[in-house]
Image (cartoon, rainbow, N blue to C red; front, side, top):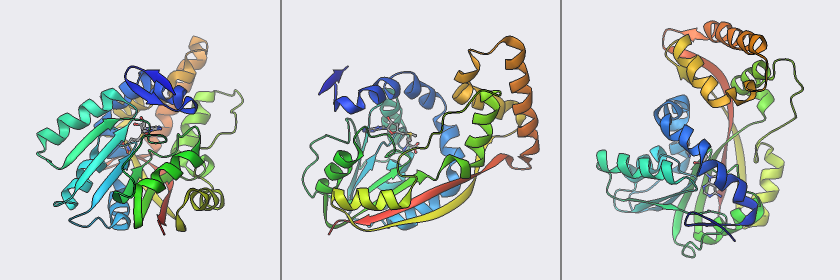
Length: 279
Ligand SMILES: C[S@@+](CC[C@H](N)C(=O)[O-])C[C@H]1O[C@@H](n2cnc3c(N)ncnc32)[C@H](O)[C@@H]1O
């Protein structure tokens, strides 16, 4: 186990702890509302699949600032929802928001979901919106989640399909690469066959990945969206010379302008809704 602050993580997640309990988590906390707005179009599909019942105990994995945790708790009115995450800062915001919005049946813990000793078979539904793609050892992580899921309980995940199918990430990566080579990269669970093998080996059954494509929101207009995107993805600009950097930002702004609608700046996005059952 690796210890940083008070969080015990599997060594394979030490790098993620450093990022999410550090700069990445700080960036996400500052922009929590924008991230929630960004993927708002997935909300109904995700919760329809989760099918949370009033008495359910729900586990929200990689819950971040906790919007899905609070949403789940509003459905599990006689049950409870535990949100777990690596980021202390995001969890502090999650606790504050749950209090402000008067959602009493939630709790949050800063733990590594891959190894945390959840009560065995205590969870009716495990949910995760983009929080299950970062495990250092995915098989161990999903086996741990399967152990926490009661027989007949379910797992419902939202993950990204390959980046080449996601207009938003392909566009921003290409612009910020500014002609440099882009290493091929996809997040975990982007291949449904691999996902099926992984989740089945971990102890789940009836694994199903359904493609869901939704427009993703980046800001009200070009200035607003450009500021947000440069904040999130612009790290790659730092080692470019001044004029190449300026040109990349101009290219970004022109592209954003082409994606301006009367409701804001939107790009296409492509996700998997992954469902499985604990036999
Ligand atoms: C892309 S964010 C999504 C946050 C949130 N679910 C949302 O939809 O806004 C991914 C989250 O997964 C969390 N995470 C990554 N690895 C984790 C692990 N091993 N255990 C618990 N949380 C983890 C990160 O700290 C981060 O908050």
